[in-house]
Length: 485
Image (tube, rainbow, N blue to C red; front, top):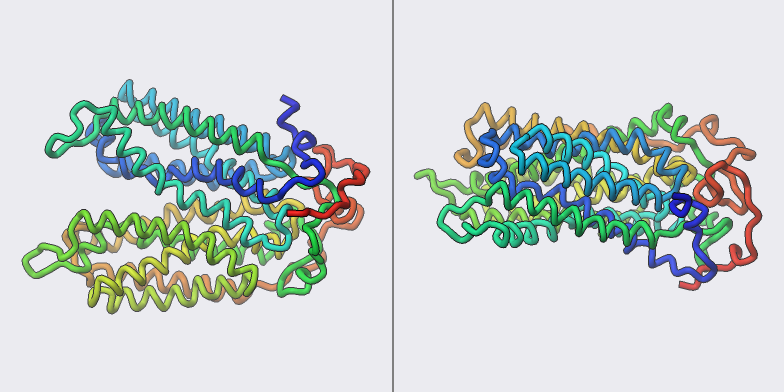
């Protein structure tokens, strides 16, 4: 399996760095299917005779495993390179679908937990972080743009998976089209098998087209000193082991946790929420179920677009300032939504769209924020450890919102006032995140790697630009050539 090692992924002279984002997207568009599980949720409830909570646990396990596996395997991903990481992610992610399908066909729910939840969740975490450090090294001049292009795929994966899933479920189930139709378990099992085959092929494309830059490579006309003069941007390197000991890491952890928890506040209840906000005295809603479904799709576009637009904007305004927008403006918008959102459907939709764009932008910008603070040496591993904030938010967000709503009644039968306590709680969380972001300062020099460590390679190269054993290698003549893309 040596052909998966880092040294076999070094780009040849004249390689176009713009071929790297499609390789990263190949992975993120596939694992983004995790956001489309609601398409077959009701079918699994009926197939297993289970509750919504029991089926919902499948997604929760996957998100928890995403954060844990990203934290545990982050250093391994950085050490062995993106190709081996993407290959492993493909095996685990698609293997999770296969085991999940077996659980569906045999009516063993625990196999779906173990397959899609645990095995697939580990692949989800490794796949999520695998292209990040590589993209940052190819785009040192525009790290926000680079990570935004890839992580945009995770937010947009559901836009592809949702309609494809619906079409395939109809194709696989002979009873489709009948009144009150709910897909059969057999159809969902076949859908899982289809995803396993298609996603494996597409993720293999990403794994075998990914490249790392040669030692000493720089984009044409790029001057690192201009970037290093920007606020918080360092030319030093901090290892993952030391990064988690710094105050800055935990402040950014808290920033991400607050931003994600608040975003989930809308995403988790999007469809019933918009209907409840415009409920009339007789119990009916001005918003139909079809329109509510369209609203969920619109939020997916906001989630995806925010990952690209806001992270790209951060290259201009800076990472700390863009998070002040996510958190400060986000808190203001949440307040308006809670107090005045029911006055106009257009106002409600616009507020929710922007809030969710901030949610997506927070995910895409954080790798570049970490690069600014800790350097590129083990940014993938540091990012992996930070994603435990996502796992925590994935549990805390729904718990907070559902606790408030359960005290008011049943979502789908509530009014706008019932959502106010939950939304104002999200405002408080965003304010906490805003203060934490204000406290972020440059990392103290005592945490920096010494000049003779593997973090400082030839001409500023780092550990992704040398053999896995950390030895220095002579820079080939072509390495000094500038990128002509």
